[in-house]
Structure formats: structure tokens, C-alpha cells
Image (tube, rainbow, N blue to C red):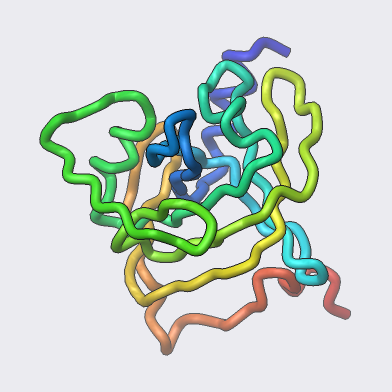
Length: 172
């Protein structure tokens, strides 16, 4: 299968958008936009991010704490900035986390200690043990068919509440 075909087919899966943050070489905040993020385990609390081996952040994350900042629907410019399209007009407001710098006003965040990393071909899969997380209400930023979109909070009357670890896929 060609990488172009795989990329096009993968774009049919809607994802959220996160910025993975860590400390850079000179202890400065560093971030990278990622849409390959997932919760892995409740016990222990683990999350996973997939980072391209060519990205500077891949080297920076090796055996170091990292943050996963889930972006709000109004933070598309921040997503494109950390995706390598630097924009001087983008105001980046950092806040100090307990382990790493975090993005202020993110919809949610996870602060992680390094757990394991795995070979993922042209990517490295970093698992982090969540030591602190927080979330707030609001619409999320999604990515589908190579475009950003607003992922609104479902209306309460229409929404079914599912535990993100226990979707009803094996219900009798």
C-alpha cells in the first residue's frame, strides 16, 4: 500500500487535536501538534502519542515528561502554529504545570511521566503515565479529511454518556 493511499484513507477517521508539550534543550517550552493520541489504560493511567521520528519533539520526549493539551475549537491557529506554520500573530500563553509547560486555555490537559516508548516504523509511540489531568466544558477542535472542524458538545437531551474506556461494543 502506498503512503499516499494510507494517508487519504486514514483521513476518513475524525480525530481530536492536541499539542504535545515538553521542555526543550535550553529548558524553553516546546510544542508539536498531534492527532495520534489515545487513552490506553486506567490502571495504571496511561496515554499514548505517536510522533514522527523526524520531528524535533521525538528526540525531546525520549525518557522525559510531556504534556498533552487537548485544543478548544477556537484554538485552530495554535494548532497550525505548532504544526510548523509559525505565525507571529499567534499569542502563545504558557502556564506552568507540575512537570512540563502547558498551554493556557486548553480544553483539557494530561501531564505525563515517561512510561515506555516503542518502535512505530517512521514514528515512535510514547506512552506516558498520567500524574495530573484537568478538563473544562467547551467545544473541541477536530480534524477530518485534512481539515479542522468544530466538535460541539452534544446536546444533553440527545447525548448518551459512555465511559471512554467502555463503549458498548461488547454489550449483550
